[in-house]
Amino acid sequence: MGSTALEDVMQLYRQLIEAWNERNSAGMAELFLTGGELIGFDGSHVIGNEEIFSHLEPIFTNHPTPAYVFKVKGIKLLSNESALLRSIVGMVPDGKDDLNPDLNAHQTLVAVKTNGMWRIELFQNTPAQFHGRPELVREMTDELKNSFFE
Image (tube, rainbow, N blue to C red; front, side, top):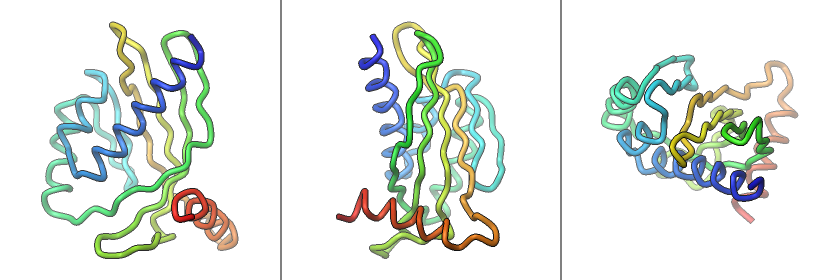
């Protein structure tokens, strides 16, 4: 049960990242539970599939959102029906081929299994600015580059 659940949660997270990278607001919103919550990079907090869709649709329509690259730092089962995933992410702006360190972030996903399917209860995207510690920004950027651009 453990490894399959961890793999399922990892797949859910990959689907979320793919939907973002494809600028697919409907695809992202459908991965959340009915009352699931999203806390964005700018601090926006939206609740529910419809609100998540309505929040993301104008962003994807009006802005060339950068693509994510990620490294999962850990997945932990909290119960048979809930899990916590932590990752670090960087973003490659449109038309570029390298990460913009100003866009590095920590992501946290809480997944819940309902009716045999894993869905997102909470997804939080927190900027990793490391105020006054530029060496930590460089370390995170290097770790992401080593994972994705080898």
